[in-house]
Image 1: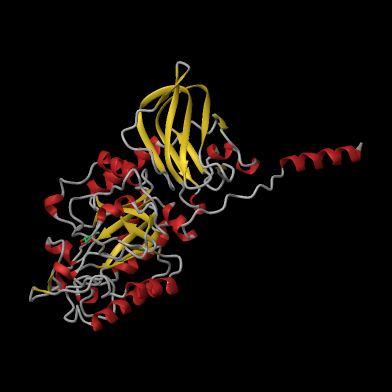
Image 2: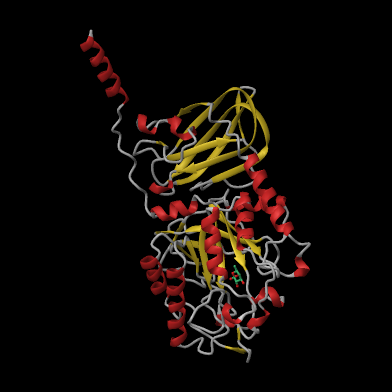
Length: 476
Ligand code: FUL
C-alpha cells in the first residue's frame, strides 16, 4: 500500500514535470536593467532653476544666481505628490542649458551656493526619494550657455567631470538624461553670440556612457540614440501605435534629426533602445505664472498615458516647480486624479477567471493559462517553428469590455508584427472596432474601444519574428 502511494506520487510528479526548453531569444534583447526600467512605466521630470525665477525656458547663462530664491522649497512635497500620482521615480534638471548647477559643486561658481537659497536641491531631492521609495535620476545638459570655453576641448573635460561628480554624490541613479538640444543654432552667454559645434562628436558621448556604466551600472542612459532608452521624436508624450524597441545603433546619435524614425523605432534595428515619451504637464518645461490656467487635465494625461505606456513606451511627465519651490496645487490635483482614474480603469482584469485556450502549445510550462495569470514572468509560448497563433478567452457569464492589454515576454525579444482581436457576438466572431493599427505589442500595448458585451474574446497573432511569447493578456 505504502509503495503504491509512493509510486502514484512519483507518476503525478513525472506527468507535471515539463522540461520543454524556453524559446531562443530573438535579438536584439534588452539588458535586465532595461526591462526593470520599462516596468516603471510612469515617472516624473522636474524642471527647476534660474529660468523658474526669470520667466525663461532657455536662459542665456548670464542670469544673476541670486535671483534663484525659492521661499518654501520642499522636496518632500514633490516626492509625496509624485508618489500619489503613481510616479515610480523622478529626474531633476541638475543643470539646464543655462549652465546653472542646482548642487554645490566645486567645478563652477555658477551654482546654488551663490544663489539666495542655502542648500543642495539635488541632494535634498535624492533624500526625499529615498524616504518616499522613488527612484532618482538626473538631467545634465551637455549644452552650456554659461561657459566661456563652450565649443572647445576644455569644456568637454568640464562636462565629463560634472558627470562624475553627479554620479558619485547621491547614491543610486536610475536614469541620466543626455539632451540632444544644443548649440548648433543657439545663442551663448552674455555676449549672445552664436557658436557651432560638431553635434555628433563634440561631447564624446561614448565616454559619458562608459562613465555611467562604471559608476552607476544600473542606470539607463537616455538620448536620441540611447543606449539605454531613446527620445521619441516629440515632446507631446506619445509614440507610434507601431513601436519597435530597436534602433540601428550605428546610424543614430544624440541630436539625430529624424524624429519620425524615433517615433516608431527601426523594425530591423540591432540594438534594444525602447522609447521614452517626455511631456510637460504645462505648455512650458519651466514654471511661468502665465501658464497657471493651462495645466493639462486628468483627461489630457489619460490620453497621454494610453499613447505612451499603452504604445510600448514609458511616460516621463514633467512638473515645473514654482517660484515658492513647490509643485503647484492644480498640477498636483490633476496628476493624482489621472493616476486614480487609470488605476480604476485598469484595476479589475476580467480575464483572470476566464477559461483560456490556445491554438498551439509549446509544452505545459508555457501553457495558455500563463497568459492570463497576472504574472509577467510566466508566458504562453508556441513551438519553435510556429510564429503565429491565437488565444481564446471564454467568460462564465457575459462581460462588458472597453480595454484590452497585451504584453510580450520581452526578456526574449520583441516579436509580434501583426495581430487582431475579435469578440463573440450572437455566436459569430466579430472584429473589435479599433482606431489604430494592431501591429506591434512589445512590453505593453493597451487597446481602447467602444464597449462590447460578450461571452468570449479572441486574440489572433498573425505574424511574428519568432515563436510567440505572450506574457499577459488582460481585459477591463
Ligand atoms: C529639450 C530642452 O531643450 C527643453 O528645455 C527641455 O529640457 C526638454 C525636456 O528637452 O530638449
